[in-house]
Length: 120
Image (cartoon, rainbow, N blue to C red):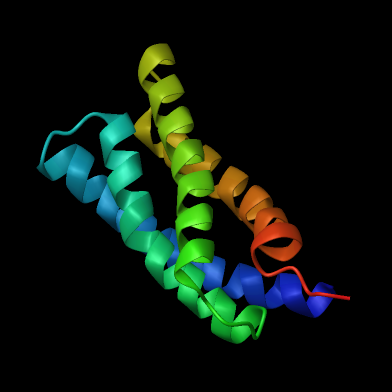
């Protein structure tokens, strides 16, 4: 389990950079609100994360149904965090930090126990 988590975190660091750069572009350059910026950033980063983790972390096939389920689960989290951040006027940097931490933990659990669950 530790090896899986280490690989997941490594990909997560790259995924986080992709997410943060995309969020900053949407929020600061395109003047989008945090909810939309966070959702777009997630969609851009999720494709890299999903396929890299399927191949490298979990050594599993990556089907369309899995991709859609993973994207919906994580996208819902992105929307919820962004929406809440907008409502409480949370600073964008804190939104990014909070979402990154939350998505790392819940993304790993969801990937390991639902999306790429090994058949016994």
